[in-house]
Image 1 (tube, rainbow, N blue to C red):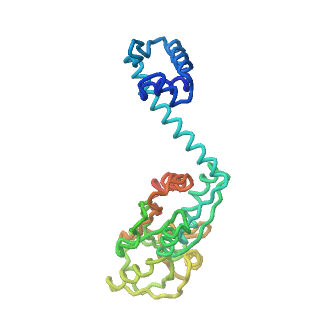
Image 2: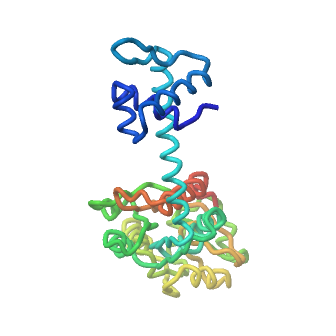
Amino acid sequence: MLDLPRLRMLMALRDEGSISAAARSLRYTAAAVSQQISKLERETGMDLVSRHSRGVTLTPSGDVLVEAGRDVVLRLAQAENSARRLAGMETARLRIATFQSASASLLPKILAPLRERFPGLGLEFVQVPRDEALQLLRRHEADVALVHEHPEIPGGIEQPGLIAEFLHADLLRLVTAPNHAAALWTEPVDLTRLDGQALIVGRVEDDDRQVLDGLFANMGVAPVHVAEVGEYFIAAAMASSGIAITLMPVMAVPAGYSLVTKRLEQDLERRVFLATREGDDSVAVAAFREMAFQVMRPTQSKL
């Protein structure tokens, strides 16, 4: 294996043009540099420098070795920097702004492997509306944000200084109890079937309710609102009792309840994004991003 300090001396010789200049740049004596380069030649079994009355120049073999050496030195420096940054993960904290259903479904899938990889990483997260999450990110009060928008109401995600990357298409589903008549409806279910049906509705997660109300109005569909709740898991719990049906994105459908989900004729979705700050190359943010894409790319809505 080549001796790295000797390789650095050969690189300095090529850069500086003479053994004496290379020695000065490395703070060695000229004799020491000459001796170490001779040892490098013996290690490689090749003539690396050509000695003549005007001094020394590199041979073609020496030039090849120097170019390869530069790549080795660069990679070692990058590895050292990465190691130093990873060492900082032992005391780092990652602040995450997210929304309700992402906290219950996406976030655990991302954080479990992240903590396994970086057990010393501290985690903080807060559930806030999309605009507030992005403001926290811009004010450096959050490091990453999971946010969503509806194609019907675009324009809330793209903001100066932030990068928003598409993660996941979260499709809307009809959710009902197994003993409810709607559980027997043939898929895909047309939303016109909800006309006059008892429906649990929510005041949740940014534009979800606005999109549904607009859709019903355009279709002339008038469900009977029997309950209005603030969280999707409450809507799911009430629907599981059989008193009414509800509509919610797949990500929001909680585990632990006896529920039937039905695909809809109207292919409604909300798009989930990972937002970060431009130029933020911290290891914690990069690791979260990597885990998010590993977890979510294959996970399109299947229910």
